[in-house]
Length: 169
Image (tube, rainbow, N blue to C red):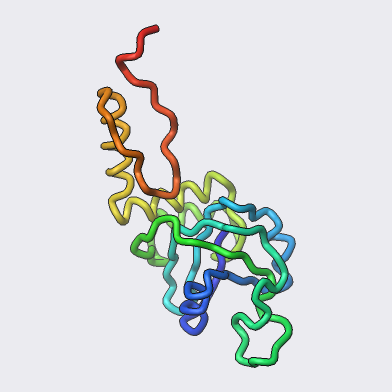
């Protein structure tokens, strides 16, 4: 799922660990489950940030005063909210990135909204490649295949189980 923010709300999103959507996106956000890959698109700077992990399903007004300029507010202007944590901190992707555009174009609509599992994996892989995480995974997998003792990588997406090449059949 891709959430949106602007330059005014980005620090609040990251500081609170809460991302929000307007009420009319409640149905679209119903697919979010704890563990879902989440991304944050800054509409002002046209940058996509990630990789985040949903800690909660979409819930109404986890923080009723979030994103509101009124300290007495009882409902956020973005009441459909989830708690998140950073899974893998990567340099952001520019809105003009051709690979990102190919992935997002296949879903139609704007930048903000639901992604299929395959689209979320593709965006996560694209972000991970920005910070060298994919190369780390390749080296990790090669170490397993060579039968070496390896330390599991500290990244968001666990590697697929790889059979050791020395395993007897």
